[in-house]
Structures are given as C-alpha cells and as structure tokens.
Figure: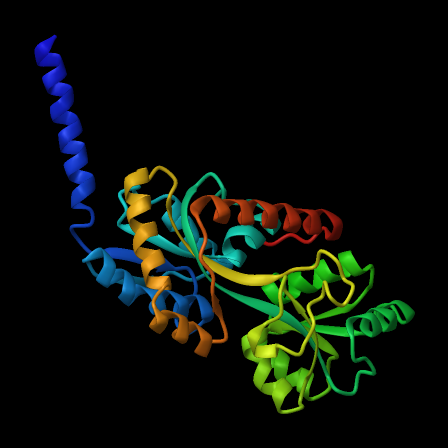
Length: 319
C-alpha cells in the first residue's frame, strides 16, 4: 500500500512539474484567414505581448480558406498540449457552423476558450442619394418598395451578407442581395451609386462617412462606437435585438488541461490590459474587450442560436 501511494505521489509530482514547465517551446497561434485581414492583424497585435508573458515565441501561422473553417478545424483536432492556439472570430466560430452544410467542428464542444480580445461592430451605411436618414426611414422605404433596395456585401456567406439577412428577419423587410468579391469592390460600387446600402465594419466605413461619400444610419451593437459616437445603435433606433459585431478571442483544443488554459488566460488578460495594446486596437478601429472563459462560451452559445435561427428562416447553406 505504501509503495502504491508513493507511486501516485510521484505521478502527481511529474504531472505538476509538466504543467509548471509550460511552455517550454514555441507556440503556434493559428489565424484562419489570409495575411493582411482583420483576424491576421489582431493575431499579430497580441502575439508579441503573449510572447513576453509566456516566455516563449508565439508565432502567428495563417491557415486560411473556407471562410475560416480550415484553420479552425486544424486547432480543433490538434494535440491539447497548449502549443497550438486559435485566434477565433465570430465568423468562424458561430456564423460558419450555423450555415455550414456539413459542419466539421463544434464551436462549443471542440474548444477551450480563454478570453475575448477585440470587437468591431458593423454599421448600416447607405449611398447619400437614398432618401433616408434613420433606421425607421430605411425600414419604411424597404417595406413600401420590397426588393428594390439593393444591399451590397463582401460575398455570399460573408459577415456583411449574413448580417443583412439577420436585419431582414428582425425588421421584416425584403432587400435584394448583391454579392461582391470582397468589401473593397462592394464599397466602391456603393459609393458609385450602383447599390444602395451595406452592413460594413465601422472601422472600414468611417473614412467614407467622414468624407460624405456614405451615410451612416445605425450601428449594429449594444453600445455606440467611439468611431461613430454620433450614430445611434439599432436598438436606440427601434430595431430591438439586432446586434452584429465581429469579435475575436483565443481558444485551445477542448481537452487542454485547466492549468494550461488558465496560464494562457492570465497571460492574455495582462496583454489586453496594456495601454500599448489598447492603443493599437484603437488605431485599427477596434475595441479591446476582455471576458472570462465562461462569458466567452455564453456569448458564443447565444450567437450560435441566433445564426441558426436565421439559417432556418432563410434556408441559406454554405458549402
């Protein structure tokens, strides 16, 4: 019996030592989108701070494709040793699984969340020629002339597209979807008057709104954006329950030990508390937003249910 207990104590000691040694080699931070986009930039903004806090290089690795599904699936199936992390986003973790024909991962069961990192709300912007100046006027026009208001997007299945679908469900209107190959071409045609509106990220639209090329109608967030402090939220404008923001967080595979998850969580929170980190995100038009792992799971669960409802009501499926 004595030898048995000694064996157990030795095993626990070895396990504890392994946990306390983490990390002892470089860590991959998977950004499941191409270089240069918001997710990639977010990953590269927090990676240096995580490197400093964890004492090992945190290397950003871009594994784009399929709207973020490829890189996200890689992390879901990685060894739960703490050396592969995901810079996840609302698009890859709640929107895509809700609309995917054959989901390849479960956003709630396959990941261990740490904390939210940043959030960028979307805003409804219109061409100045559209005779509306508020969400109520926009909805009234869309109801009076169903299908005549043309809604641009960054492509079928993009966040800008599906946010527009959510708006139509909640507001009870019918818009005509005009997909583009990216938000850049969509904004160019919108400013040229070829389309009427788009649900775009606040950070992207602000320069065009300030220049008078686009008109901001309402922000799809629970509170006003610092970049558009004078623009009401959809809730303030009377569209209750309409919220659509691009948020990011850091995740590990689901079976990762709580000790490692807590280690990463503690390091990440310290990085997000730094003034240099907050200033970097402000310059990007984003806002730092921390959370506990439980709060992040709750947010994702609510979002997933919201997007699944939209999928059921619209019938949209993404391959």
